Image 1: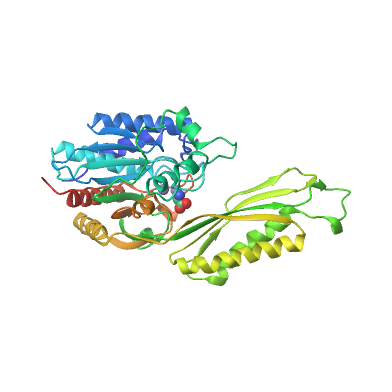
Image 2: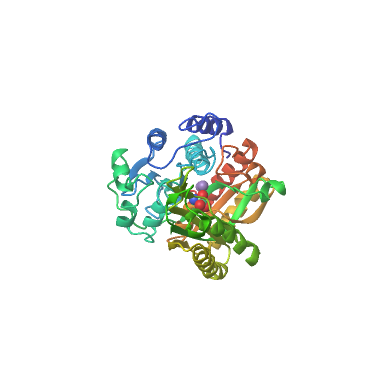
Amino acid sequence: MKIDRTRLERTMDEMGRIGETPRGGLTRVALTDEDKRGRDQMVAWMRAVGLRVSVDQMGNIFGERPGTERVAPVMMGSHIDSVPTGGKYDGQLGVMCGLEVVRTLNDHDVRTRHPVVLGIFTNEEGARFQPAMIASGVMAGKIALEDAYNARDKDGIRLVDELERIGYLGPEPCVPRAFRAYLELHIEQGPFLEEEGRSVGVVEGIVAIAWSRLTIHGVQDHAGPTPMRIRHDALVAAAEVVSGVRRIAREIGGDVVTTVGNLTVHPNIVNAIPGRVTMSIDMRDPRDATLDRAMPLLDRVVAEACGREGVRYELEHYWRVPYTPFAADVVAAVERAARATGAPYRRILSGAGHDAQYMAAIGPAGMIFVPSRAGRSHCEEEFTGMDEIEHGANTLLGAALELAGLA
Ligand code: HGY
Ligand code: MN
Ligand code: MN
């Protein structure tokens, strides 16, 4: 039994047009009108293949295909929200492949012992509301529902109000639900599979992640008459923090990665000395102990940069997810399914966070990677070829079938 490649490609093309950018990328940011249109399309497809659809308090969407036994389901999940000017594969590929697996089971009238569920998690990207994976985090009991509801975007709009506005503030409690296994197919978003000519990644775990937010308060003043000797320029301090964050990665070495991805200057005009800068710091490593070493280094970089410029600051370490190993039996099932496709595969670690990270906190989880062209992601150049996608989707089919058990 194999997935229908042509149908999968057609489904992906249709979904990719919802939020498509002029350069062929995707802007479908969480809880925007584009996200609503994508959700509505998914619900229609889910219902058309006979799934019983439910929506929970965080707008997570679940479609259930009954099993012959009343036991915990095998869940295939991911997300359909994207970063701004992102790609058409991050997240949505896993959801499209999960839908294709259900369609394939229907085509062959397969009955499984365990029910099979297709899940779509809200705001995985953390691009609009922080932190990332907020909805799977609530479901895993790691983030309080009220805190998630009160998360605000850059315009001060609350997450819960947007859920209500787009009609996805569901009635189902967003609480841990038992599952036999959670499987997430996702693009690698790194270069290793492509470099080695492998089509499938059997993911063993996900790195530890730490997000911090820094606000620097300088003295806003006129760019002309203010002598250099009396300036307290928030952006000068911020610039030193940016290079300091990169220095931390260089000093620690190994697999640690550090990024300042977001930086906002106020008042952000030519002729005013910046009075305030807010910025994000993202640090990751496969080992929690390494991140534990990096945090005080970040504190020191910030204190010294702001001390030199004589500016005040608030530094908040607001999100931390530990290194997450996947369940050995699920990884083994994924590996058997990858091997059965005949495609070259390898075991691999994920440098990106995924909803599977929180799902692994409440049940046996695993992931399947497919290569990213030139390792690129979170950009309009994001791309994965259909040959690799076909191998990945057949791996998902094989692993889901093994874990759900034929009736
Ligand atoms: O941040 C991440 O790694 C994911 O793309 N949300
Ligand atoms: Mn993703
Ligand atoms: Mn992403």
